[in-house]
Image (cartoon, rainbow, N blue to C red):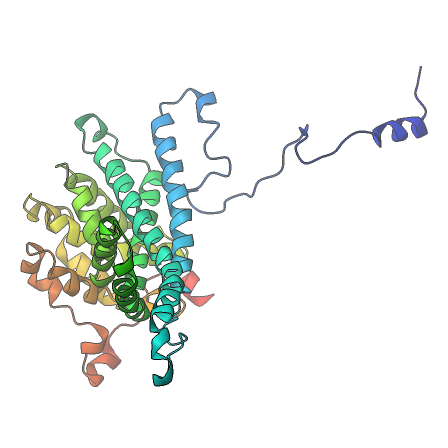
Length: 360
């Protein structure tokens, strides 16, 4: 017996349509128009259904993707950091008796700001350890046959790029060491009355090293990576992938090109500083190819008002990596500010991207 339409509509109106109710048809996902999709809207949960031996890789990729997202949030915190020392009140001479109270309140204000830096310090240490462990998986002989997938390569490069940008932001923020010096001074004053401050002083010393050392994040990554040998192979795979992607225009979008250009000088320094002879790297990638890429892209955007120079990165990191300091041809590349005015006009300031992208 047929049910009248009115009764059917009335019955349907009683159904619960809350957000947690199952749907017969799932939500539609975006369609990627890139040459190769490097992200999964469902986090590769469908891999097990195809009975493929990719569960280990997809698990690692999901972990890297989570770290990338967290790193971008850390970058936003660091980018928006503003000094609060200038806003702190100064007591006149007539109120010097209240100096102790002012130190305590100043310490409480600055401790809240320094907690952000502690969180970034802890996160970068964890991220560097996990990235190094992921790269070291491919140093095993059985994993060198096929190597990481393209998606896995991009995930490694993106996380490395996040670490490079965080390091560059930390170096560029002059307000951070200023605030920290005030924080340490107030801690010295207020901790006199406290007990068991040894752990706090140790944490303060670690934070001071992190704040005051340039490229502290990359130096820590280098230590984590070379706890186990044989990571040179995966470093060279990443360099070859980045160079070929830039030369053959495999990276179509500006953000992808900028990622490759930001991490390439760092990868070259890390690979050349390993225990193995760096000549094996330059047999796979001729040094002229690297020089042409760096010369054609002298300035790379990092943030809206911050830029990076590959030549400057190479020169600055060479002081921390003595083995790389012997690479005179790469270190002879002039930084943009080192060019004479006449030569700077002839210096190629264009990005070597496809003409269709540049013309649009």
